[in-house]
Amino acid sequence: MPHVVTEPCRDCKYTDCVTECPVECFYQDGDMLVIDPNDCIDCGACIPACPVEAIYSESSVPSQWQGYININLERAGVLKGQGKQLSKKQPPMKGPNCKGS
Ligand code: SF4
Ligand code: SF4
Image (cartoon, rainbow, N blue to C red):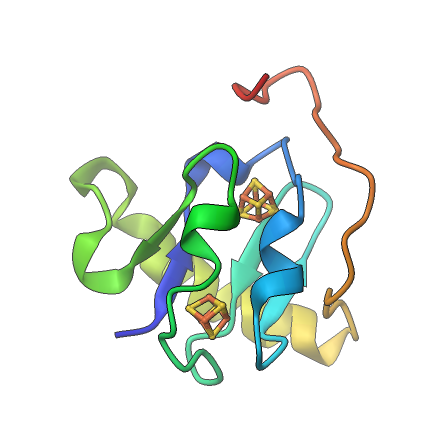
């Protein structure tokens, strides 16, 4: 079961999660991060690192965010091709729609 980044990451991008990942499988676009499900080893280390609880095991994704399972798969494939891997923490985006503090 790969892990999945969901809606709360959108417009937040705190990026604390990426420093925990042993296989560097996070990718970013202008709005949020995604996990490449083909590379994730399901260690779960990223889950407690996220301040807005955006990351879930695929089997535990809340019903309203099920669409993010495919979003992570598709976006990670595209972003990988664009070299948008992220493995170092960067300043949080914290845009106007970020619900985090
Ligand atoms: S820590 Fe959470 S909000 Fe921040 S980039 Fe990772 S998934 Fe997104
Ligand atoms: S579960 Fe582990 S391998 Fe998968 S994205 Fe999170 S930290 Fe990386």
